[in-house]
Image (cartoon, rainbow over all chains, first blue to last red; front, side, top):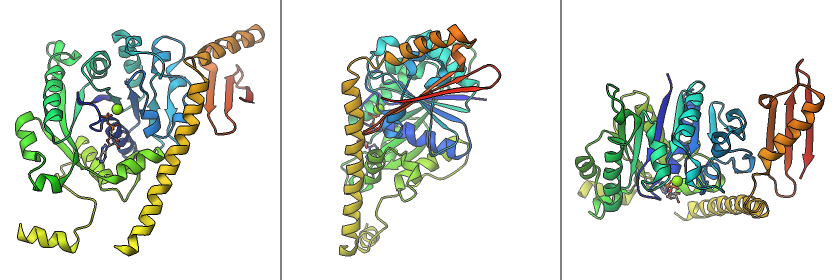
Length: 272
Length: 93
Ligand SMILES: Nc1ncnc2c1ncn2[C@@H]1O[C@H](COP(=O)(O)OP(=O)(O)O)[C@@H](O)[C@H]1O
Ligand SMILES: [Mg+2]
């Protein structure tokens, strides 16, 4: 049985593309045949983050418009056997996406893949709408700050009303998960950033995981590698744990920071 | 602290250097392709037309791969022929 999962947020720059690449790679590592689709038409970026930018021949729009077969547009990851990327067009605009076109491509992908990860553009316009429309589940990527939480709430409203599952009677509603990213425990401790409980209380959806703010994310994007492939990265580990939960494993949510607790930190923790 | 600060710094510089090189290659191609890298669907269609004059093939049997490089890019066109023979054409761009 194949699942379509949208990675969405409303707000830009919160970590959707980073998350799409990481979750796609972690699912592939678990043995699931996975494809990650870039829905950000005109601002192609997933290919760079996943390191396949030099191999793009055809894209999602070419497939929708019948200029290429799906098989030709899919790019196979060089590192992970089960991982594929469907890049978007860098030259067209969002109007090139049509609801039936997207539906047809997703149906065809469902026959082949266990997981179809849709990397949504920011905003709540056409691209974001079509990225979520056919989803079975959603991962709402949120940073612990006011505008991101507000936008996530808006997106949750759309997930519950403007999707195929919401529109069809008798179907199980779309399942939404919260993924808190760029979480900085030090700033939360200082009271500068909302903490997990605050965000959960406001958004009231189940927590899939917490991804700490980590310099390893930038490094991974520099070299075009999903961060889960860096086995020294705590962010990568946190993504792996989130995917294990997505896959039904019961794992407690922990917050890890980059530095191993140093002397000073241990001291601070004791006194706290 | 001191012991680790140097290798860490070197590693950061290295990944940023990789980022710069990747961007330079990609952007050079994007800028020269102008606003229409869309020649590829056309190229595929035209190749298919030519091949069809001589052999029976359909669109499903064509596979185009591109690898953009720094000094050289390669375009690989694989056409699966009935009878499982393969016609392979590789050309540098
Ligand atoms: N956990 C993290 N720690 C540090 N930086 C992060 C983290 N997640 C994302 N980023 C950075 O945030 C920026 C935006 O991320 P991106 O995934 O492109 O967001 P979006 O797709 O939502 O616009 C990028 O520079 C990325 O490297
Ligand atoms: Mg993005």
